[in-house]
Image 1 (tube, helix red, strand yellow):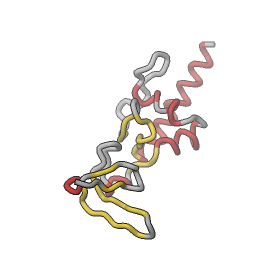
Image 2 (image 1 turned 60 degrees about the vertical axis):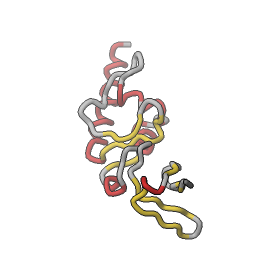
Image 3 (image 1 turned 60 degrees about the horizontal axis):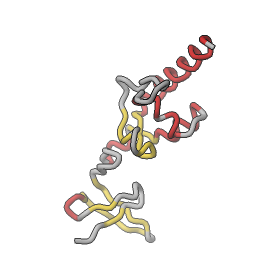
Length: 121
């Protein structure tokens, strides 16, 4: 059975995984439950790309900012606890999304951590 590739997320899906798809001007848009980013299209209005937040509000590349989400690496605290994220912060940080209402809180936590770290030096 052939797969259809979504040009939005890059994932390929079998027909039974797809809700619907359209192809306009050579761009395929697939409405699906994306197991890579764990988000349905209707949820996309509530979540934004974490990489945009990392670069725009923290001045960090996504790969480094995402380490604050889970705190699994030494010297990187878990600053994402209790906040809403979708995607895989560990294996595929480019898939990471943050709920739009949690952005300011996450940025505040990171900036407070930086200030505290500077005081200790």
